Picture 1: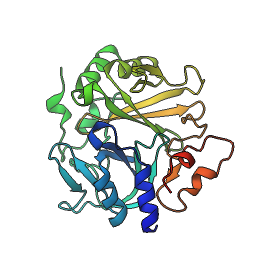
Picture 2: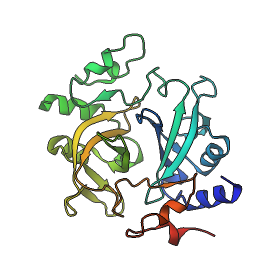
Picture 3: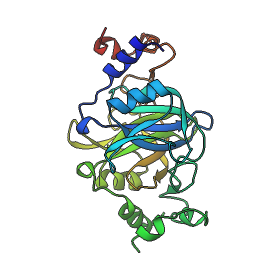
Length: 136
Length: 136
């Protein structure tokens, strides 16, 4: 992909909503599991294109965030797709470690159905946030 | 899933951000393709759980939206997962038709890489919005 393509691609994306932040879905290119969702502004999306690793905007820390820069759990970007409204990004990645801060492969490890909230107790060696936030 | 579980599951979700709207990723349970992303408020998520079809909040029309109610392209909800921060939903569905208003299976039919924007011209019989919005 050359520089002109990057410019054109970035110009196509609609950052006008939600203070310049749009959702970016991260999907494992091999297993096709949805790993996480984070938010990108124009700068973090450009860095993602340029470095072929995932960059997001942290809404809690108000700063750019290169996934795995400290943990080592980086994500190599194989493809970047965008939707018909041009306001959502889908990043297909090769994951060098778990996506979730709890140590799980995916952040979507809990389900409304089929045994919820049992899943939270399945893996005793990692954080189980639902146990403390659940309303009895 | 019984009524108590629904109440507990809905109470777990954090609707405090973005005026009570959180993103809901829709993934095909069989092909594992990511089909679309839309937004849910508490009411639309509850309707999704109760009816086992996808309900969203339309940000453009400011109304509840039952996917496929007019087009027939409904989505049967097989599972609803939520992420570690409890502010993003992942719906696994059986799709009764294309997810995208352009007639495509997925809304994510265009890529930054590998021939972009060629994909927009691949399917001459459906809308190709990028052709008109692209900046030369």
